[in-house]
Amino acid sequence: MNRCLRAGAPSGFIVSYPGRYPKRLFLGAGWLGLFFSLSGHAQIHTQSDFPPQTVVLTLPDAPVPQTEARSEMRYEASPPHDSYGQSSPQQNGPELQPDVHAKEAANPVDLWHRKYLLGEWNGKRTQLERKGVSFDFYYTDDALGNPYGGRADFGIWGRVRGTMDVDFSKFTSWKGLTFHMTGLWQYGVDLSKQYTFTAVDSSSLPSAHTIRGDSYFFQQYLLHHKLALRGGQIAGYDSYGNSEYGASFINLALGYAHSNLNPSVYLAFNPAGVPSFDVKVLPTDHFYVKGMVQSEERNPYQTDPSGFNFHLGGPVVATEAGYIHDPPKSPDATGTMGSEPFITDSETGNYPGVYKFGAGYNPHNFQDLLTGRSSPGNYLLYAQISQAVYRMSRQGSDRNRGLDLTYSQDYSPGDVTQYNQQIMTGARWLGVFPGHWSKDSLALGYVHTSVGSHYREAQLLAGKPKLTSESLIEVNYLANLTPWLIVQPVFQWYVQPGGDAHRGTVFVTGFRTKITF
Image 1 (cartoon, rainbow, N blue to C red):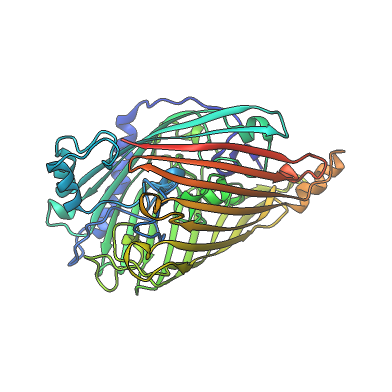
Image 2: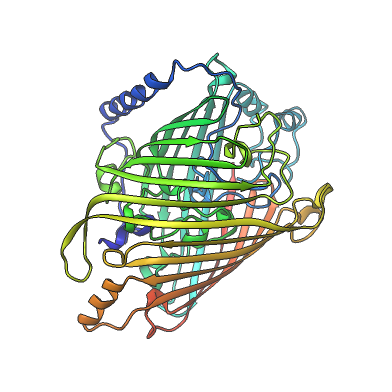
């Protein structure tokens, strides 16, 4: 098992630049064309005015932007989405309604109250959104240091990301069809890989130095939004095993997704999306089932450095089923729209929650970390509960202020996986203070990561210290200084870093910054 591929955090740095696009774009377009030739003639009767999103539930006025994997994509859940957006998706705060955009375009607000740093482009941004085309450009970085424990040092990991969403129903007769595309430039110092050597990265952002197309895909809703088909270049991490409250945390596990998903089954992480096809069934407002098949890429930055090679490897499968409690109602939603549009502006239930169970499976060969023998197939199971448990009011400005709790646990066999079990739990208080600060959040999280049995035995045979498990505690405060500027100070405490009981405690502190242009 190549440890450097863990959760999108290779130990080496790769600088990649786009090259030889025409042929590879042609192959990618042909693959997507096959998908749409199968679905394009279905009868579609519903309006889809929402960009592609992941099965994730967040409050419309919640103070948290998605992690790249979640804020930008959010069917990236990107940044997030990317993981700050993860996302996308994964990961920008509540979107303004079109009439709010129009009001700002007609009467430009001052620098500190506008939604975007660069404003509405003299109304062009609003005009494009009304025609079905929306853009997001933003810069995110994590400036972190370890004043105590490990090799004391400081570093910054930064991302510049651009996203585009197209809603074809706004300018064609084809209803329910959307397109999403995102790319980035990222660079910097990975504190965990270079200095503290922890099992869970302190930041959800680092992977490799790259300029890369991350994800691009079409999504088609059918049967009055009861069925959704998605095909293209996708990061599985953005939709399976991802943290519901990712934007409220900085570390990789709580801030993006279970960090052992990649080494266990090689599910793709952002920004290294791979060719994928996804199907979601949304029979009611409260239940969903989804499944994805994607290409196995054990080193995506080598097989597809630009993000446009569209390389097809063997299959990796992910599935998930979930229950949505007290789901929000989007103004234009049908009764069977399910959870997809819920991360956009909507009238939400006061106590939204998501209860989900999922699995990933890779049928290809894995090497036993103790014996060295190769055997086919490995899997990972996960379960997660995320629930609003207290609200200060059922109506008015305090209806979304209160306490949310989350718990998630996964398991993978310990013979081929270095870290085979992980528990994540956390709490966040939305709207710490009233008034201007009502969209801020205070979060407390805990991550427990266990070392696999065969890796532990192999280390003992090699004369190295006994490894058990690592514990991480994180506290952070997300401050919305302006609609376009977010600052998130953080403090992290690692006990037994990397699972090594002989190592001293490691402290990490710093802050995340996000600027939406």
